[in-house]
Length: 313
Image (tube, rainbow, N blue to C red; front, side, top):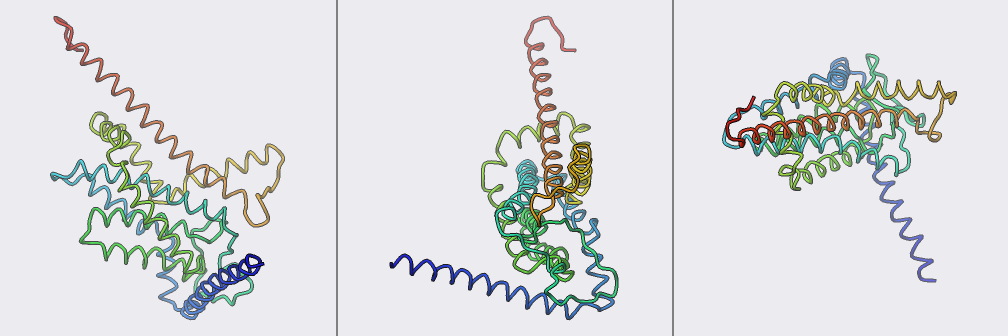
C-alpha cells in the first residue's frame, strides 16, 4: 500500500517541476512577444537567424585561423580541432535522439493556444518540421563555441555571449524555441565537446590519419575539408535539402504519398538526418581510403630504399 501511495506523489512532483519550467518558458515567450514589432529588433533578429556568414562562417573562420597558426602547439591544437569537428555533428544527433524519445513539443510560433506577436516584417527562421525540444541549433553551436573557448580561453566570455546572444536569442525572439529548449541544447553541446576533448579522440588513430593526410596530400585534404566546412557552416543545409528531395522522390516512386512517422513527426526529419549522416560517413570513408593509399605508397618507398642498388622512382 505504501508503494501505491508513493508513486502518484512522485509523478505529481515531476509534473509540478515540468509545469513550472513550462510556465517560465511561457513567461519568457510573452515577454519577448512584447518586444516584437519594433522595426530595428525585428530586422536584427531576422538577419541574425538567416545569415549563415555571421554564424557558422565566423566559427569556421576562427577554426581555420587556429589550424594554420604557427607555434609550438600547432600539432596538439590541430588534434583538438579534429575532435571538436567530430563532436559538433554528434551533438545534433544526440539532440535529435532525445527529441525522438521525448514527447513531441510544438514550436511556440505554431502553437494556436498562444497569443503570437505581430512582426514588422515577414519573420521566418531556418527551421525544420522537428520537435522544438531540445534545440539542436544550440547543441551544435555551443559545441563549436566550447571548442573555441578550449583553444582561446581568454576570449571565453565574448565567444559564449556571441553564441547565446547572436545565435540562440533570435530563435526565442522569433518563436522557434522556448528557453528550456535552448538551455538543454546548450548542455548537450558543451557536454559532447567536453567529452570529445577529454577522451582519447585527439590522440586516436583517426586524428593521426587526418594529420598525416593533410601533410602528405594537402590538395586532396583541403578540397574535402572545404566541402565539410561549407556544410558545417550552414548546418548541413545542402545535405538536408538533398536528403529530403531524394526521400520524397523515393516515396513518389514507391507510391507512398505523404508518409509520416506519426501524426506530428514528418518523414522529412529522417531524410535530413540521414543525409547529414551520409555526408559525414562519405567524407570519413574518403579520408580513410586516402590515408590507406598514402601508407601503402610510403611503405613501398621504404621497401625500395631498403633494396641495394635500386633507386626509388
